[in-house]
Length: 546
Ligand SMILES: Cc1cc2nc3c(=O)[nH]c(=O)nc-3n(C[C@H](O)[C@H](O)[C@H](O)COP(=O)(O)OP(=O)(O)OC[C@H]3O[C@@H](n4cnc5c(N)ncnc54)[C@H](O)[C@@H]3O)c2cc1C
Image (cartoon, rainbow, N blue to C red; front, side):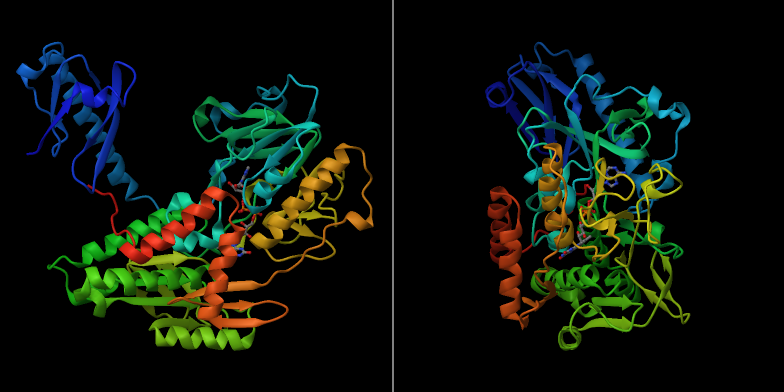
């Protein structure tokens, strides 16, 4: 038992008030914090049995802090701890993550009020109300470039950060830290007429120009409404499991930061579990087989990062397990990285063969199970971690008339004209990014497209607010800057209109491009620091479980 002596003068400089939340550390790996464990700091010493999370009743040290009170506090802490444990154990039974659920959008008991009866968030203003849905590539680019002089800007999104998705795979293995690839939405603008709502838009009433917003926190308190004069829709797309049995339940996704966090912990967990001497070789092989479903950018880059993680870090820490490790990519189409030129596809395939990454092409997954997948030819592949990276689908906001009759294409994306104005709602509703489709020239669902559209709309909507008429010269034009994919072992492939590049030179270009594309100075400093940290000290292999 380790006794930690906490002196009053240790606490005082850190905490200003007399009642404090304390952080109790049990071991370097596990940190348990509680806000209900409050201690009055009038006595000179408090003693904790830090390894057991119990407070030792030690009379001599507690002159002004009664023993009985201490016991009550202690039992409160224990109760809370066991509740947490219970929650954690039930969490293990729910899917690692879901795509959007219809329940997120359905009215819940007390939320059946018509939209016009809901409390209105932005009622007391005469200024033009611009409302933006989503803070992804499109939305964040809009926020950064929009002139707020003539209007109020309200952001509605459940995610309070912008996520730099091209580097998400690196965060799955600790090459980069999670906080280095996000930008806080609240800090994006300093103006007083910039408002953020941690809520999801679950209905658009285009007649009354109202949005039904469902708060992320305290959902049971009910929805509220936001009025808009101009609405910008940039809600992106959701994961599409194409109805494959078990994919939602047992598959891991890679779309949000939380997904990356879960993948990172799962990989580490698989390795730690595999060290149990009671496991058979077969069980170990099953645990250490990592499978990506989908041979496009996300699946390829993720497997490449996992490959580097194993080769550079885990091989030193778990040398006895290296023979059991296996990586596989399953692609339903005839080729992986199908958007690249044939020569680059061949190069990537050869590279993966050399690095012992298995590629299955022309094979469909028909079921995802707890311990692997079943393919359409009836064969089974056992695995410790299955990551679903194949396919996207429209948000549930556009299903069942929730979006108030906005025109949708066959993929249920909002149809817009060349000024990104929604057909039939010109002058009041705009859409961009993955969730929008230009009727004359549909574009790929990429960050490049979304961010260029965000920048364009920021200037176009500002012009409209000044009463300028749109014309052909100020319609949106997309400029393609090229495509890149990291394939592991400090190699990548690049294709632009002018040239094709592969190997190390391409990797240098890949890293420097993303470094320059990062949106803030903060991230431009953090990302290279993380790269250097991973290079010198290795990637982090802790999962903070106690
Ligand atoms: C792992 C990964 C790697 C990628 N790599 C690349 C790459 O290298 N290059 C590239 O060009 N593209 C890449 N992409 C694709 C790129 O990220 C998307 O095309 C891009 O994010 C689309 O931007 P968006 O603004 O349309 O939507 P998103 O970025 O998906 O943002 C959608 C926003 O809408 C919010 N939202 C959702 N529902 C609602 C609602 N009902 N109400 C309000 N808000 C809502 C979300 O919280 C989010 O803030 C990658 C994607 C992933 C997942």
